[in-house]
Image (cartoon, rainbow over all chains, first blue to last red; front, side, top):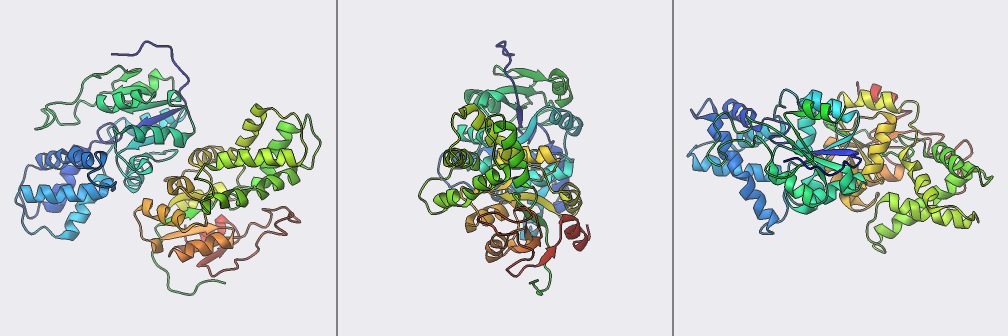
Amino acid sequence: MTNTSPPTTIKALLFDVFGTLVDWRTSVAMHAQNHLGKDFSLDWLAFADAWRDQYQPSMQKVRSGEIPFSSLDSLHLINLNRVIQDLGLKGVEESTKRELNLAWHKLDGWADTHEGLSRLRTKFLTAPCSNGNISLMIDLARHNQIHWDAILGSEIAGNYKPNPIVYRASVKALGLNPSEVMMVAAHSSDLKAAAEQGLRTAFITRTFEHGPVGSKNYTQAEHEAHTTVDYSATDLIDLANQLSC
Amino acid sequence: MTNTSPPTTIKALLFDVFGTLVDWRTSVAMHAQNHLGKDFSLDWLAFADAWRDQYQPSMQKVRSGEIPFSSLDSLHLINLNRVIQDLGLKGVEESTKRELNLAWHKLDGWADTHEGLSRLRTKFLTAPCSNGNISLMIDLARHNQIHWDAILGSEIAGNYKPNPIVYRASVKALGLNPSEVMMVAAHSSDLKAAAEQGLRTAFITRTFEHGPVGSKNYTQAEHEAHTTVDYSATDLIDLANQLSC
């Protein structure tokens, strides 16, 4: 579904990161194998899925107020401990866990990410609006040679998407009106929440976010948006073309 | 005075911006003349000084808790109204004031700023730790072609330097220890406050921040640090040389 309302002047693009810009699944699997592969023989993609499956439940504790805001790095480490316990992996050193936790700082971008973002930045302010903390976003940007104008999202808001405050705080930091800002994501839930705060929306298809056959909690990636959006693109280069960048 | 303690591994540099990286005085004077020069004949450098003279008192109201945190853009606009009133300038349109207020988003860097920051970024994470709000910092970076890793400082802390929370929040966002971060500034008060939070410090001489003869509240810029610092440099290129960038 694409919105048919007249276009407003879009001045800035906010980006979801995990899944939309970077391939967390194969990157995390690779780093997990690098850190744990000498001691354990596992399906490393399933390990990445299991770790990621803890993502939403852990953030929900913050969103519900059950626990105070803590960075995604902190939640990732708690979740890693849980996965290691669930899989019965004995004797993993704390230092190994801390190093493996930084896998999320070194995720590889999709093939179009660098070029797409570079082109989009020629016309728009660009910033991540991710649940990842600032230092994680800094490291991902360095790893993938991304030039952000600022790093917005969960840490400046003190809460996690899709809590409305994350979109509102990010728009406010840009000094813009919500209708001047477009959220770009591969997930309808993110775009729907952004649209509810008045932002414009662009859906990006990321067919292989969850691998060719999906995982336990995600049978497959979204091939098209399940909510009304302003733009729908096959990748960031397609979006750059549609936005005449 | 230069600190003689053994060097620690510095991973990130935080920069003061107004005065240290950009020449606010002549830039503001030029923009004021552009916006008001058709109706008024003034000493525009004195106008810039008068506007800047309101800077510390307005932030002090936030630091003391007298008023809640509000962005520097907001304070600048309040301060502009005061200067216009004090100087007896009648009939200035609200739209003109709002446009002139954006002069602070378009300040020109010193001659060494672009090259110095580019070189420093090859070895360190770099971010502003300024009292300017995020959108102001975004615009200054675009105006001067600066590539920041993140924008830190007052807005993420909800307070103004030299309140300790601004340095602590900026270091925390980088995911580093204070001793791994160096504050770079042309003002001893900023460096002293950063050092008190455990940061390393680098002083930059900006002889002409307040013009060749100084202004009412600043008889002259600091030619050398009045507090113990780790590095002292004549400009950012000198600092890059000293740090082997």
